[in-house]
Amino acid sequence: MQRVDDSLTLLGISWADDAPTLALRRGPHDPSVELLIGQELAIEVDPTARRWCLGASGTSHTTEPCDVPPEEGRKTCTSCSVKNARFAGALHHAHQQETSDPDLVKHLDQPNRLYLAAFRDGSIKVGTSTERRATTRLLEQGAWLARFVATTTNGIVVRVVEDRVTDQLALPQSVAISRKIDGLTSPRDDAWLASRLDEYAADVRRLIGDEAPAAHVTATDDAWTNPAAADPLWQRVHSYPAALLTGRHAMQVVGAVGRAVAFRRKLGGDVFVADLQPLLGLGLRQISGEVEPDEVTVQDRLF
Image (cartoon, rainbow, N blue to C red):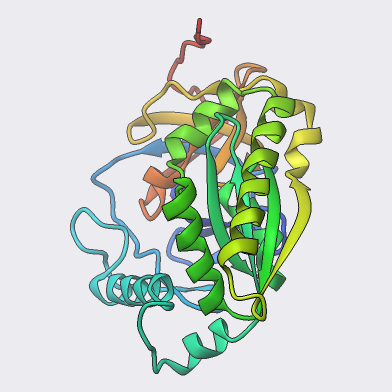
């Protein structure tokens, strides 16, 4: 027998401790953080249900809970939207304009790393991170392989070098989640991906040697592989064919790569992968007892 219990609200996925955790709110209670893998999410989705603000984050990379209703069609309230946009803009343009924000100044005044991240569809991007969060940043983004190609004395210099890499080697600074999931369901060969990544890494190191201020930049050659690459779970996953924002879903979470969450349905052994972002902030109805999720059809790509 099925029973609809208190609402469940998913607030976000974090890799703060290099393991995926899920911030959530059960019913009217305060938000809590639980391990993502092992979660059993039996839910019924009503897109018109109450939404909760996802909050704001800053240099600490922790999100502040917020009880103010979000703006129509958005996942954050006006105040949190402004805070997030202001911080993101200031950080992104830190090398192009001065800032007086003491927290941001402190954040920028620490060693940084420049990396190239490869995703399983073949996409490669350039990115930056503080030295202490370098591997966490790759886990957050769902990179499959990466090369750390330089260290810098601060966050200003690393962004100058990042822009040069983008301008001269046409490497983007972001990759869409849809491409990341496409790569997980129809992956390129790891050896091919590593070879392509190494070629770009060599190009970046040559560029650094030719143009970067040597006193502030040191070329490196450090490889990184996502731990998920050793997990047979990811050898065969399917894109979740159901619409997340409607109907009933029964998910047993078994893994994650960045925002991409892998799960089994209670009625079968196939592993599906989906981005749960559309559900964040929405009051979901929890279902207990024998759950009958909506039917789905598994269809692998032919090409």
